Structures are given as C-alpha cells and as structure tokens.
Image (tube, rainbow, N blue to C red; front, side, top):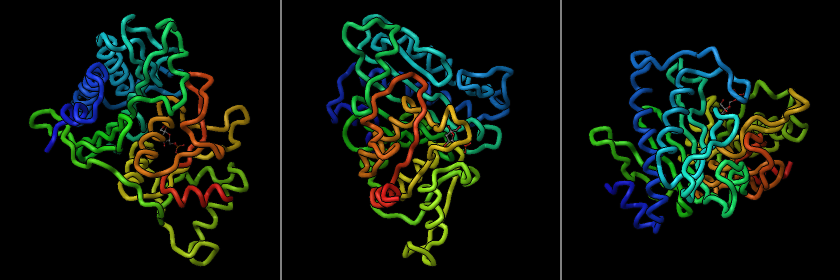
Length: 320
Ligand code: P6P
C-alpha cells in the first residue's frame, strides 16, 4: 500500500505544504498512542479550567492542543496557528507561508467513555503583507483551504484528508507509524436512509427543521417513501466519517436555546474542513441555505449551522 508522502508528491502538493502536513500528523500519531493508553497515560478526566468557548477543558484537550501548537510553532513553514482551545491566533515563524487551524480534540465528552474522538484541521496559504499575529489569515472563505482533514481515533486510527483533489482515507499502521492509503477516493451515496441529529434539541428548532425531521420519523407512513434510521455519536468526526463511508445526512441546525447564539459548531475548524471533505466526496455541506465553503468568516470562533451529507437528501432538507 502507498504511504502518505508519495501520495502527496503524486498529487503535486508543494513540498512546504507536505512538511506542514507531516508535522501536524506527527502530533496525531503521538495522540493516538496516548489515547490508546487511556487512564494509564494519565489522559482521562477534566481540568479545573474553561476554554474560550466556556467549556470545561479535559486533560486530553489541553495535552492535544499544546502538543500540536508546539510542533507547528517549530515548523518554519507555519506563519501562525489557531485553535479551539486558544482565545486568539498565535504567531509562529515570520517566514512561514501557511497558517493552520485545528480543533485538537473534537468530541471531548466521549473521552471518558472510550468513545470516538478526533482531531480536525485546516490549512490556508498565509495572506501577503499581513502581520503574522493578524487573525485575518484565518478569516478566508472555506473555498481557499489548501488542505482539510481529520484524524479519527477509533478502533483504528484513520486520516481522512483532501489537498484539493479527492477525499482520501489513510489508515495508521502502528508497526511503523505510517499512514497508508486505504481508500483513494471516498464517494458519498447521493441518497440515504440514515440521519444524524441530536433529537433532544427538537423543541428549539425552526418549524421547517421540525417538519423535515418529523417526516423522516414517519418514514414510509408519511411523505417519505422509505424508512429511516438514526445515529448520533456526540462527536462530529465520528458522524461525518460514517456519512463519508456509507452516506447519510448530519445536521446541527440553528436553534433558539440561546437567543444570542443560535449555532453550535465552529466555522473555521469544524464546519469548513468537513465541508471541503464532503464536497470533494460528491456531497453537499450547507448553512442557512448557503454552501458553507462560500461563507465569509467574521471572527475566529464564529459558529454556524451545519447540514451536510448525501446530495439528494440535503437538497430534500433545503426544500423544507
Ligand atoms: P451535542 C462536540 O462537542 C461537538 O462540537 C461536535 O463534535 C458534536 O457533533 C457536537 O458538539 C455534539 O453536540 O449538543 O449533541 O453535545
């Protein structure tokens, strides 16, 4: 099987970008080991701190963030990084031409129950003539991403990534620490019978969303001519990976729980990278009726609605 680096060379990825990807993935290999150690590696449980999102930080959140931040800050090709766990972007190397944003550990609530968790990352070319510590580097539209991906720490450790071409899946071979190309081009089936949403928020959704989900629940007894199944992992990486592998529609719709903040998922380091992966696998990724990749970000930790997956099913949702 082909290893990651030759695959990237064959795809025409610039050497400097290959170096940045390799640096980031070195961190994910160490994380995969630490996570596999669980309590033995001292990585379970929570800290006494909260992050910028107001969420209690798990020990592994902090460990993962510091590991990736330190590795990338030492890579001469990295101008700056941004992270779910960092209030602002962090300037790294003045001569770097790339900026990297990441959710170091998505699905933290799954850590202590040995559930699926992952690292989501996105890479942009740095803007010219803009200071290294400017957040403007990270306010580029998702269509400007030069690389997007996630590492899913599950029964096996998988890397799913696109550098502008097909969405590829690599499997970590722990015997020699390499990511091997195991699926050269993921393709999301255009139709599905599986949806993924946190049903406990149902009373807070828009009427359109309530009606769409109600019809899924009615299945062949209602407006839809088929029966649907539901899955919710509590970690976007796990739910999106299922959609990329066998189709489905994943929804985190706006809701009115908090009048000041209708959305939950973050645009920069959750929605945009997943939208690139889904689009390059033939699916759709929308927010309030617009293609997520076309949105103009306004702030680093901006949140956004996410509805993504099988093309025909997302279009059915939009028709409501
Ligand atoms: P809820 C994890 O905290 C996350 O950001 C996503 O990975 C996941 O899809 C979502 O939030 C889960 O949210 O409200 O179901 O706990």
